[in-house]
Structure formats: C-alpha cells, structure tokens
Image 1 (cartoon, rainbow, N blue to C red):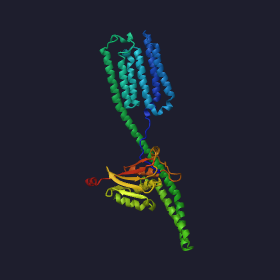
Image 2 (cartoon, rainbow, N blue to C red):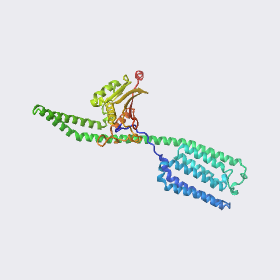
Image 3 (cartoon, rainbow, N blue to C red):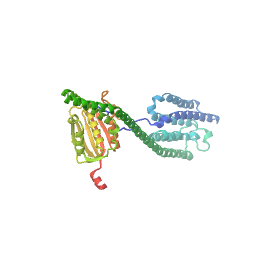
Length: 439
C-alpha cells in the first residue's frame, strides 16, 4: 500500500538509559577498586606477610587495562552498554577473588567488597544480571575457604588450613543471605522504577503526538485562511465565465472548461479540509448511532464514483450498531481505500467488515507491492510517504491512527513484499446485550 500509512506507534526498541548514564561512574569505581586492591596487597606486605607480588600486580593491571580499553571504545559500545557493564562487573568479581586468594582468603575483611557489584547491578542492570552477579559472588566467596594463600596475621584463632571453622562457614551463609536479600528486594524496587520510566516515556510520546497535531492544525488553519480568498475568487470568476459562454457566446467548450475549473476549485477546498486536524477529531461532531450497513451506505455516497467502482465490500457485521463520529470515520476509511488503490492494486480493493471482542474491524486489502520491514517500522512517522514527490504529504494515515486512538481503537498494518497490505481499523462498540443491561 503506497501511502502516508501510519500504524500505532510501538514502543521502540532502544538501549536502557541507566547503564549509559552510569557508565562514567562505573569507570571511576573500577579505578577505585584497582586502588583498593593495591592497598590490600600493600597492607599485607606491611604486616610482614609474603604476597605473590607478580600475580597481584597482574590482577590489578588487568582491571586497569580493561577499564582504559572500554573507556576508549565507549562510542562503539553504546548499544550494548548493559552487557558490557555486566561483563565488567563479572571481571571485577573474579579479580577481587584473585586478590583475596593471594591475601588470606575469607579471613580478609575486604571480602565484603563482593556486595558492591551486586548493589550496583540492582541499580543499573536488569534483574537477570543481578542474579547472575549474586550467584557468581557467592561461589567466588565460598571458594576462598579452600583456595587461598594464608596470612597468619588475619587468620587469628579461626582455623587451620584444610579445615572449615563454623564461624567462617557462618560468614559464608550470612554473605549468601545478604546477597539474596539485596538482589531480591532491590530488584523489586528497580522493577518499579523501570516501569515508571516506561510510563513516563509513553506519556512523553503522547505529548509529542499532541504537539505534532497542534503544529499540523496551525499549518492547516494558516493554509486554509490564505487560500480561501483566492479560491473563492476563482470560483466566482469561473461561474461568471460559464454563464457568459453558455448564454452569450454559446460556446459549450468554454462552458465545460469553466465547470471543470469550478470542480477543481471545490476539490482544492476539500483537500484543505482533509489537511486539517478534522481528520483526527471533528470539532463539534457528535457521535451517531448507526449500523455498519448504514455506515457503508454513507461511505458509498461520499466517495467518488471512481473509488466506488474499484471497491468490493464484504460486510459480515451488518446488524452491529456503532456510535462514532460518522464524518471522521468515513474520512478515515476513504483515506485507507485511496492509499490501497494508489498502491497499484490490480482489480478491486476489498473492504472487509467484521466484529468480535467488542471491536468492529474495517480491513482494507490491496494486492500491491506490499511494504518492507523498514517501511513498516517508519510508517508511524508523520510526513513519511512512499508516494512520488508531490503525490502525498504523509499525513493521511497518521490522522487516521490518531482518530482511532482517540476513539479507543487502533490502526494496524500487516504486509510483505509482493503480497500486498492489509490496513485494519479497529473501533470499539458496545454489544447489544451490554446496552440493554446498562438501561
């Protein structure tokens, strides 16, 4: 369907804001953790303990090098920031585990630093990554009871190597419980925050739609105001010329040309009306109750004979009563039918009408070239059209969708190249039994 066609705007797939916004602070934090790891090694040396300096320096160097590399490549990683941040946190947990293994294992009081990544992941990462980091931290912390370089200054009276003291075992259990509570409750709070963020994004999209409609209304009003006078003058002059050629010179050819001018002038006026936001919401038009059969009759009366000759109607909901602004609905259906015909459909365009789930469906089928996935994605943008230059403004279906949404309905498209397009206008209606019960 070659059209200024616009289905309901989906919530677009986009990277989450939290990881991108927190990324500079994550970089600073990782540098701080590298300094902290260095401090742990230095304190162990000051206590007179023997620490594998080369291994410890390698772990700290890995943290610094990865930090610098990610920072330099940040512009290339924007779309994968959540995965990158989660990967950095996993690397930090492993590096912290290595440092603690070299400096006393679970006896090292800095083992509580495992909770840092878990807490941060709750704030800026998804619930999935929070659980992954919590599980990894618990496993790494537990490994410190068996794999470590002992530091007598830190072990005290807890245990001898190779056995597990109940106190340290309790530390492990306490750590696991703390990690679980942080991940669970903070995760719930994070879900609420993300849900509110999505609601705000949807509200922002609705405000943007209203702003675009306001600008369209201003543009249409200005165009109608500026063009009303010259169009009126042209119509008057054409009428006078028609009268003169018909009764004075009796030149039927000139009279026919004058009638054509008046007809085209009227068409220009209708186009100006169609440009206005009346296509989305007719000011002062009260909803009317009528059956879909009566609605189809009104549609056939209003559309041009050319459109009517190309239209095939299948109405399986003739007795269904709807309450809609009839002018807006007819304009919307006319726009969809016109788009379908202009898509290069061979033969007739089919309008199928059906009802179900408290919705009345008007499906316009064409057998044109269809739409690509890219066109379907952009089709919700105002002023977007696949028609040749000068053949469309890209507003018709946008206004149809706005009208549908304001009535509590939807406008949906399904299409594939070489198979045609189906534009479905869904409008709510009140079933007869509900109307009887309401009385």
